[in-house]
Structures are given as C-alpha cells and as structure tokens.
Amino acid sequence: MDLIESYREELKLIRKRGTAFWVGLLLGALILLPWVASEYFVYLLTLIAIYAIGTMGQNLLIGYTGQISFGQAGFLAIGAYTFGHLARAGVPMLLALLAAGVAAGLFGIVVGFPSLRLKGPYLAIVTLGFGIAVYQILANSELLSGGRMGLSVPKFLPEIGIPRATAVYYFHFLLALAFTLATYNLVASYMGRAFVAIRDNDIAAEAIGVNLTRYKLLAFAISSFYTGVQGGLYAQLIGYLEPNMFTFMETITIFVAVIIGGLASVEGSIMGAAFVLLVPQVFSGYKEFIPVVFGITIFIVLIFEPLGLSGRWLKIRLYWKNWPFR
Amino acid sequence: MERFLLYFISGLAVGSLYALVALGLSLIYRSTRILNFAHGDIASAGAFFALTLMGLKIPFGLVFIMALLFGSLLAMGFYFCILVPAQRREATLLGQIILTLGLGLIIQGLTSRIWGMEPQPFPFPLSDSKVWNIGGIYISELSVGTIAAGLLGSICLYLLVQRTRLGLAMRATSENLQAAQTLGIPTRRILAISWGTAALLGVVAGLFLAPLLLLDPFYMLEPFLKGFAAAILGGLNSLPGAIVGGLILGIAEGLAGGYISIAFKNTLAFLIIIAVLLVRPEGLLGEEFIERV
Image (cartoon, rainbow over all chains, first blue to last red; front, side, top):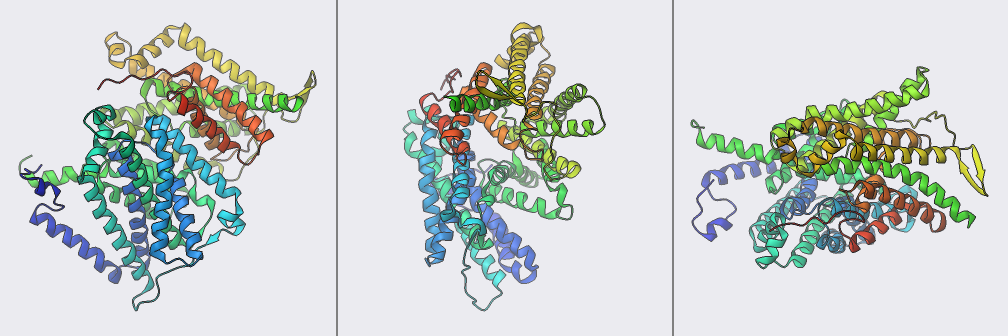
C-alpha cells in the first residue's frame, strides 16, 4: 500500500501522522473509558485484553509460522496452575506471571519437537493429545488441581485510591499493550521473517539459511509463553481454578479467534479475541442459543470475508484512501 | 489369558466404531483436505433424531435408515449451502475447517435446545447385559452387533469405492479435482455424495455408541476425537489405514484400561499415536506426500 524507502521506515510502527492521530485517539478513549462506562463493560474489556494476549500468541504460531496447534488448553492450564500455586505460596504477582509464561513456554518446546517431522493435521493430533493429557493429569491429581473444591487463587492489586475494577482494567490494558508492541516488533524482526518463511515453505526456508529446528521450537515456545501468561491472568481475574475450565472448547475458542480475526495479523488477533467474547455476551439473553448464534456469525464472517475481520478492515481503509475513486 | 481375550474383544468392539468414525473423516479429508469437526455432532444429531422417531413407535429398522438419511442430508446441505459459497469466495483451508466447527456449534446448540442437556438412555434392540459364552469367553450381544456393524460398514464402503462407477468418480475427484472436471465428472455432486457417505458412517457409529454411553448433546465429542486420532494413526488419506488405526486404537485402549489404569485410558491412547507418528510421520498406511520446492 505504501512506498517504503528505507529499512528504518519499514521498522517504524506508525508511518503516517494520520495513523498516529487515530491510534492516539483510540488509546486515549481506552484509557478514559473506565471513568464513563459501566463496571460490567470494563470487566469485559479486561477479559478481552487477557484473551488478546493468548490470541496473539496463537496467531504467531498458526498465522505466521503455519504450525497448527490444538494443545492451547494445555498451555493455558499449565500457565494458570503455575500461577495459582506460586501465588498461594506468596510469590509476587509479576514474578508468578513470568513463571507461568516460562513454564508454559518450556512445555511448548517439548510439544514443538514433533513439529520438526509432522505437518498439518498430523501435528494437530499430537498437540491435541498433549492438551488432553494435561487435562487428564489435572483431573486425576488432587495435589495439582486442589481436589474437588478447586484451587482458589488469592487476588493481588491492593487498593490504590481508584475503584478496583478500574485498577484491574489498567493493569491488564497496559500488559496487553506491552504484548502488542512486542508482537509487532517480533514480526518485523529477523525472527518474524524466519517464521513467515517457514510458513510459506519450510524446505525453501532451510535452503536460504533459516535454522528450522531453532525457529520452529522458538515459535512454539513464544506462542505458549503468551498462552501461559493468558492462563495466569485468567486465574488471577477469576480467582478460582478447576480442570474443567481447560477442555477442548477453550482451544477451539482461541482457534476461532485467530481465524475470525485474520491469520498473520496482530490487529486481527485483538479483533478476533473481542469477537469470541462479545458475540456470546451480546446474545446472553438467549442463553441456549449462544452456540447457534456463534456458529452462524462464524458462517457469515467466513463466507463474506474469508480473510477475517482484519481483511475487511484493510478493505475499508483502502476504500477511504482511494475515495472517490474505486 | 481369559482376561486378555475379554479386554481384547471389548477393545475390538469399540475399535470397530472408531474405525467407522475414522473412515468418514478420512473420506472427507482425502477428497477435500478438510478436517470435518462437525462429524461427531452430525452423528449425535442423527442419534437424537432416531430417539424422537422411536418415541413415535416406528419400527427400529425404519428408524435406523431414516436416521442415516437424516445425517447424510444434513452433511450434504452443509456442503451445498455453506461450503460451496465459501469456496466460491476463495475461503482458505483453515477457514473451511472453522466453518465445520461452526456447524458443530450450531448442531450442539440446537440439540441442547430441542432435546435438553440431561443425559437420556437410548433404547436399542441389542442389549449390553445379555451375554453369550463362546469357548469360555463372554461376549455381550451388543459387542457382536457392534463388530458386525463395523465390518459391514467397512465392506460396503470398500465395494462402493473400489467396485462401482460412482466410487471410481470419487477416487478420480480426490486424486485430481481439475482433471476430473475436465473428464466430465460432476465433481460438486460427487463431493456432496462423499460428504453424505461420510456422515452416514458417522451416524452408524453414533447409533451403536448411544447404548454404551448416555445420549447428551456432547456424547460424540470423545468418540470423534478418537476417530480423528485413529484416522491419523492409519494415515489420513488412506481408507484401509482408517480401519487399521481404529482397531489398533480400540484394542490398545481396551488393554491399557484393563491392565494399567482406567483413568489414563485416553492419555495412553494418544501416547501410542505420538510414538507411531514419530517413527512414521505419515501414519501407518499413509503415503508420503512429496513436495516440490
């Protein structure tokens, strides 16, 4: 779309003054929002921020590196339970969150090893097996899962003079912002290029000097780090954990968020996360119809916009840019 | 030894149902490269439909056939009304897989709405408790019926694919879509028939699983995942592979559940698959996919 003249320009996050204006406006609105919107809406935005982190991670794996993983619920559970146990042991929150991400990332490397030999659906089934194994181990081990009553997670964030929901929102908002910036940078770096090269053709990527082993495992590690952090944040927000929160449905939710948002798109990941959380909320009055409505919206989005929400967003931007020509 | 045979036979019975589910999945994968995530849900919709018909005092044979027809019509409807328009707009492969997920969600929602979330018993003519003693081994009537159904389903599919003109067209379409079109094969109709046949096999498995498990909107999720795993184990693009994979998975599960631990039955099954795939990445009977750079 744009003419890029130098490498430095390519690396810039925001290339035009107009874009900077709109992004600033959006960020300002998001910062001011908790003071005007209802507490429930702020809570929803907090949830979207949490899911956006995990969806970006999954998009790095599916969209950028082209490796299909159905084990997301497993990484989510590992992150959540690592966080839960550390928090109960009195570890500071940010440290526990980091540990949650790192623990999930290490498991990600282990799960990534089959990706060196397997592709597509074959890789999907191996990662799916991992997700199921994590669930079964948790469901059968009272020591890990906290038994029949579940594991309660102590809440952090002390009172600092502003309403609690607002403080929680700001914390998650900043974290999601940090992860978004990190993802943009990652995608523009050598590593991001290597991921894309692997997606497009891994043999060709190897031939031009991409170390397949290292970058495939890195993709798994980074993506599960994101998911682990998502799990930790989720545990903190809900304040309670049980194995049933991490079934195959959870994997599917994140997967749908990635595809609906748009493959290989950071903005798309955020839009996708918002989509999978908001659609059930909008129709929460008709509780039994939520899966039906969810399915139908998936049909509509994918039939009329195969590239996902970010594809539509690009087309709208292009339309206004060229207006009145088309 | 007797215990071994007992676990072996019960595993064989479950395995033949996994084989039927796996056959449906690999039939669709072979021809369209789509993993059908709604496969289990179509089967449970068929089973619930059969439950309603049985409430109307219709003889079971008729109910069975009507449930099969219902399932395949559902799948063909999905193919024509959702998948074809999406393909016209050049949906990606992952997008098409998500479409099947959407169909699954819709069916789950509708079955929960119409038939409720409560698990319901499924009145089946073959009973689980009536046991035959053959040479010292006890086999329930249901196991025999299940194994027979699996065998019959596989043979019918084999005859359809290998011995009829329709099967020839199906094989041609899955081999090379454009070439098949050039030869005058109505590929869209053939693919719709593939979807219908696959759903039909799924509904057969669903009906035979219903008396083993209780009927609720999610009862096919686990058998579906197992069938998926079985298809992968045998090689996704190979139909005999699906049968072999299903039987191996069922028997491994039966033996693992009997000798090691019933709680980790599922995990052990997946461990076997991972081990096999690490040695043979394309599955037991799958063909290696050679790629040009």
